[in-house]
Length: 215
Ligand code: GRF
Image (cartoon, rainbow, N blue to C red; front, top):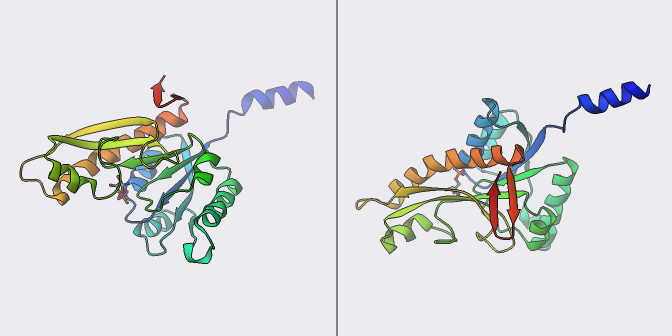
């Protein structure tokens, strides 16, 4: 009996990692992560695709892939914090290890960020800490920077300022429009986001103060 128990113990590795993807729009980054799981590059499963927008295209894509989806309407909650607490309950129910923000266009309250410290990732279409916020591809063009890119970072209550995991650089061309630059950056986003998630589930990411070390 004792032997069986210890065998069982040694035979069962840590459970498979669980991801919740949060999105508000088309969901191409969520899809890139999902594709990387399908090919076996990431050893984890997406247990929930959550949105604050009922009509988000990403929710439809998730349903087509037979993933569980959830929409909660912010209008049904008295405060932003109450809304986030409701989401926390849903995340807890599903024993989620990592939350991937993938075009989730609602700021997370400190209550939420602190509940999942170093377990929420975001992708941002600029080289942070330059150009936080919205419409950053246009801002990069208007500034005349020669290079922009994308950043995957852990999320803290300080919006777009959490510890940086991976970055990728793309040139800004003279005839770029917001659309052409966004497209060039997006292609790279689809590489570094799955890569960051992979590193997380391989246990290779270590956060020391503001810095992320890849072991
Ligand atoms: C991406 O550009 C991402 O960097 C930003 O929002 C956009 C989401 O695009 N945070 P998608 O919904 O993943 O296609």
